[in-house]
Image (cartoon, rainbow, N blue to C red; front, side, top):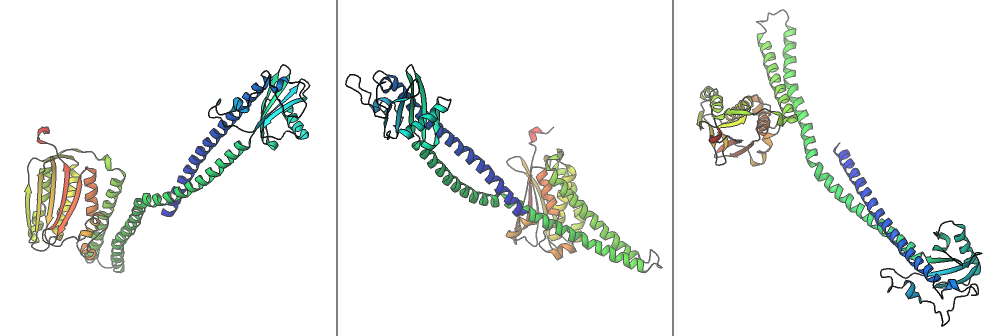
Length: 440
């Protein structure tokens, strides 16, 4: 599943990047093409206008056909640089071009051009015929790689031609460069997407593994009481002639395991509800000092029976916004764990105080065995146990601290643990307190 999700992430990312590159390179191509066409048309317009000037090619009706125009001293033809040179047209690159002048019968009367061989009468007539066939004033002749512009005069028509080789080569070079840059960019983006995909999906992969482990652990925990229930039920059915009183032992085992399974299912449902709606809990002003006192009192006889010392240091009049039942459940989990793991003749300490930031700090400490540093974060995970055999004897499922963390998070608080062999284990809960000035 994770690999398929990663593949979809990379595919979507690559598609988006490809679309962006295509649009970008397409815009550059179109812009470049339009600029080249504008430059060519500017040169063609200058050329046809110069052909209409006095002494120009268009005014010499007696000029021999297909012979390059030679201007006399009285009406010299303007040099090429004066027509389309860089001095008169900054930013316009000179290109090979020529002009053909026609009479009213569309016969060629003169030609002039630069960097062109106009001696091939047949080829020139063919090019002119193609231009005359097209109705538009401008167009291209792909076979000859020419762009042309027609201009009607009072005595005939001038047709200016410009070579498209520079335009074609520029666009071809642009396409090749775009393909190379695009391929390199796609490769780079693919590698980046591969890395980002793994990095972004790492929490999802971790959550997926935790979910699979959660299902496996929950199935195992549910399977154990069910096995006991079935075994005891088989024993009862095997002695149907005996009375209920005589088989009370097996029935009590069934009831005990059913109660354990009910507790487990309720805990799982609580965690499922908190996962889906952590922010929907309704908070109200509660007296946290009184709630802590009320939660500690039921554990005094437990501590007495186990020969443990229960110490309290609870500041009075501390308030917070929270859910009273969930806070009681939180205290019950922390106190129950402290009594279980404090060791024989150990000490359990409960402290409630206000810090400098007007937050209330609850600390529950127990002596005895400690939690290794590398496992202090894992203890808040579902079904995690430091000592599975001991937890089974104590009736735990490894859900208590996971529930405690969910309750603290729903109250926008923080829970942490510190544990050393000398000081024991301390669970610290920090909740937002209500300053004394805001109390009624």
